[in-house]
Image (cartoon, rainbow, N blue to C red; front, side, top):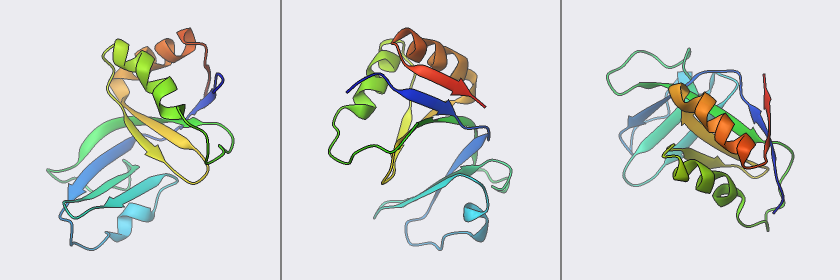
Length: 128
């Protein structure tokens, strides 16, 4: 795996945990970015903060980076190449993988530190 080009998504994100058997709320798919994950234990929603209603379970203040381009599904180590330098600096992440690429999600107040760590690791970061 080589060094990666990363793009900071412009929108602020929020996350919410709902009951596993509940319906997907209509607001969850309104924004430019959303990720829905249903398991036997929960329904997790990451989406644009502005479309998520105020609720005690809403956790605001997240930002995302996108690995630029389309990644081959046989590639290994993409997430670890990003996560390892961040873990060394105690910066927690969520990772979301899609068919085409990977996303890293950080607390907004740690975004600048995360970008610095990733740049020092040799990755190129584009900010919107």
